[in-house]
Image 1 (cartoon, rainbow, N blue to C red):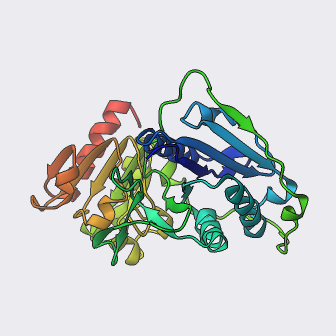
Image 2 (image 1 turned 180 degrees about the vertical axis):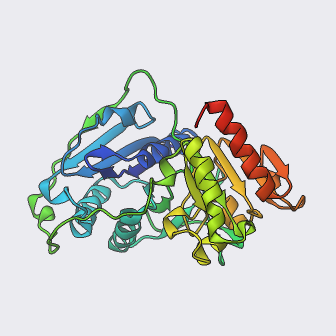
Length: 333
């Protein structure tokens, strides 16, 4: 099992390399090192303000950059044609991509174009030492079981991964490798899609995936007004508010705040879970958090199994006291 090629299809937003690209590059490096393989990161954009060498310092052996005006805004038609051209020419064994809105749109079409399989929303990736196949683990049957999927015949083996599922690697001091700007036939940029404009969506607050502190609430809060306690605590800590799926389904918080398999995967430095029992679907969305604080009155709640600090008691008593103590510590008025 040697010489395998791993490709990471990166994502560029607002002319900057999205953090998920570094996360996947680090994971690809880890997988490649088990079989003597190489890692190539691919960036499609209308222009790039970041230095692509940052991916070389994050584990890539080379970086391919393709820039064209038609790629300034998301264009599935052009992206699929360009990526299919590159992958047919390079014939990688494994292709990893982010399970973002654009990744979830491009990758199924790309897999169909290449006549290969695709495993979406993976939470785990490993190389089988016996067969050399990529073991792609993802939730199935509503998140109640974890399935491991293989692609034994078709190539490349393709998988998408949600942001924050893996940690970005520490960057090396010096870049080793090459930045390549491959020649792309001009006709591949001719698209049937015409972008009429762009309007940024409003989610009512910061993206919780980008925050160092997330304070999440569940049905244990009993009513939507109780989330004001979480908002106050999160503001003191410079963080944001998350929610469990039941709380979102009850319309206590909007979907952009949902943490879990059907919401967002977060990896903050501190994750506070208040009134959340700890269903497997929720745990999968915050399992890479640095430090987990759980507040729940049920001593047998599953959330305590993953908590670094557990506070067992009435959250309506604990949270106000915790907030007041932190307010004094930070000197907030």
